[in-house]
Length: 354
Image 1 (cartoon, rainbow, N blue to C red):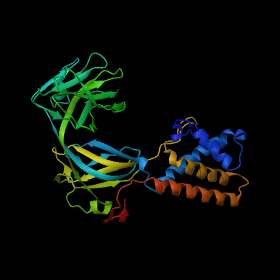
Image 2 (image 1 turned 120 degrees about the vertical axis):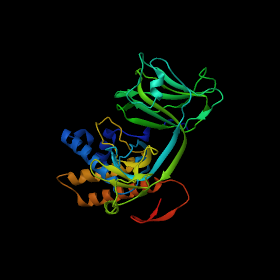
Image 3 (image 1 turned 135 degrees about the vertical axis):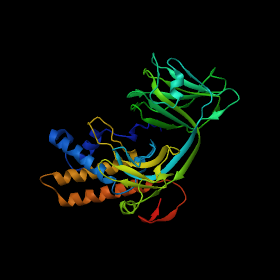
Image 4 (image 1 turned 180 degrees about the vertical axis):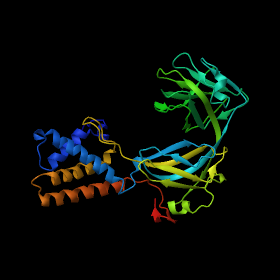
């Protein structure tokens, strides 16, 4: 028997979920009004927001890096952050002592440690490189990019073992905006020794870079989470050193505070956060959940829509609530990491299984 050979139902437009949910609630989609469609979209947003209160959904976990500032204790987290799971201080070694190069502009300005200078290129799709010589091979594990203007770059990272005669790609992050003066870090998942390394623009932007960091020798030191009460009890909140503790202030715009306050030796925070689920958006937008949760969303939306009806059928509400609860339970239990069980004690949260 022939099968489709496709896997396109991994996500679904909100329009399809809304129509299907109305059918489950016994309402013909062709008879829907604009207000009913808008009401269903609002319900989806409420449902997705509520899901963060039930389980730790794996697709909401994001790993991030943040540039630390000497003697600065508190930092803004992305506004889409719901909570933080793990935090480490990451140190690394910037490798200099070689020869800068660039397709245009003054390449040395991207490696002089001075943010007041920049390698400003004169043509799009350029590159900036660093050559340590054939006898000095470095496996670059992390790349830092500090832009001289707020621009969107689409970069690739490449290394060479023959002084730039040939280049091999080792990283291709998605296009993103770089704010003026902010260092954006990238991890090279498979570092390979090379005598040269470079960043190259691929989508028509013109590079304007204050500093580039081609770093090795990554070291992570795990930090322990403290409560607001514990942090308030510290008598010397501005003591400096290697941070060992952190406190997350879960406001509408969340922040993270480190203690001790980092010195210039500790310049990067590597952390895992829970990201809020994206809004439903327009009817043609895909809902940002994995396919294993689509059924749970359709059943729960149907329950919400039944409750909103002027002639609500309580027996149907009870049935839909039961079906939605079971569908979410099935999806949540499958949404796990298949690793040996680890049970540990946490002072603030009790006994956990992760």
